Amino acid sequence: MKKTLKDYRLEAIGTQAQAAKKFKVDITTISFWENGKTMPKTKDLPRIAKALGITTDELIASLLRCKQ
Image (cartoon, one colour):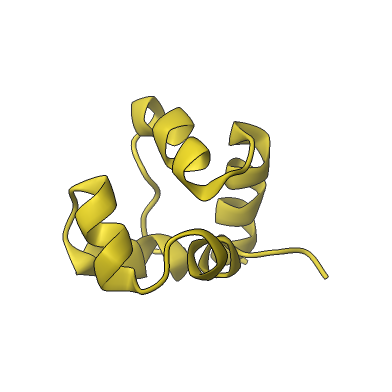
Protein backbone atom coordinates (compact mmCIF):
# COMPACT_ATOMS: atom_id res chain seq x y z
CA MET A 1 0.00 0.00 0.00
CA LYS A 2 1.31 3.42 -0.88
CA LYS A 3 1.32 5.84 2.03
CA THR A 4 -0.54 9.12 2.09
CA LEU A 5 0.50 12.30 3.82
CA LYS A 6 -1.91 11.42 6.62
CA ASP A 7 -0.18 8.05 7.12
CA TYR A 8 3.22 9.72 7.41
CA ARG A 9 1.85 12.40 9.72
CA LEU A 10 0.25 9.88 12.06
CA GLU A 11 3.47 7.85 12.27
CA ALA A 12 5.89 10.74 12.74
CA ILE A 13 3.97 13.50 14.49
CA GLY A 14 0.49 12.50 15.62
CA THR A 15 -2.59 14.67 15.34
CA GLN A 16 -3.31 17.37 12.80
CA ALA A 17 -3.10 19.89 15.65
CA GLN A 18 0.41 18.69 16.54
CA ALA A 19 1.46 18.87 12.89
CA ALA A 20 0.01 22.36 12.53
CA LYS A 21 1.98 23.53 15.55
CA LYS A 22 5.20 21.91 14.28
CA PHE A 23 4.85 23.41 10.79
CA LYS A 24 3.54 26.76 12.08
CA VAL A 25 0.39 26.63 9.99
CA ASP A 26 -3.33 26.51 10.76
CA ILE A 27 -4.90 23.09 11.38
CA THR A 28 -7.11 23.73 8.35
CA THR A 29 -3.97 23.92 6.21
CA ILE A 30 -2.94 20.42 7.31
CA SER A 31 -6.43 19.16 6.45
CA PHE A 32 -6.30 20.84 3.04
CA TRP A 33 -2.90 19.25 2.30
CA GLU A 34 -4.17 15.81 3.30
CA ASN A 35 -7.34 16.16 1.24
CA GLY A 36 -5.58 17.48 -1.87
CA LYS A 37 -7.19 20.91 -1.76
CA THR A 38 -3.88 22.76 -1.49
CA MET A 39 -0.19 21.89 -1.36
CA PRO A 40 2.63 23.20 0.82
CA LYS A 41 4.90 25.88 -0.58
CA THR A 42 7.80 24.42 -2.54
CA LYS A 43 10.34 26.05 -0.22
CA ASP A 44 8.77 24.22 2.75
CA LEU A 45 8.87 20.71 1.27
CA PRO A 46 12.36 19.75 2.53
CA ARG A 47 11.54 20.88 6.08
CA ILE A 48 8.23 19.01 6.10
CA ALA A 49 9.80 15.87 4.65
CA LYS A 50 12.55 15.93 7.27
CA ALA A 51 10.00 16.27 10.09
CA LEU A 52 8.09 13.30 8.68
CA GLY A 53 11.26 11.22 8.31
CA ILE A 54 10.85 10.81 4.55
CA THR A 55 12.49 12.11 1.41
CA THR A 56 11.17 15.10 -0.49
CA ASP A 57 10.29 12.74 -3.35
CA GLU A 58 8.22 10.57 -1.00
CA LEU A 59 6.47 13.69 0.31
CA ILE A 60 5.62 14.92 -3.18
CA ALA A 61 4.33 11.47 -4.17
CA SER A 62 2.13 11.34 -1.08
CA LEU A 63 0.77 14.83 -1.81
CA LEU A 64 -0.04 13.83 -5.38
CA ARG A 65 -1.87 10.72 -4.12
CA CYS A 66 -4.03 13.05 -1.99
CA LYS A 67 -5.10 14.93 -5.12
CA GLN A 68 -6.47 11.76 -6.78
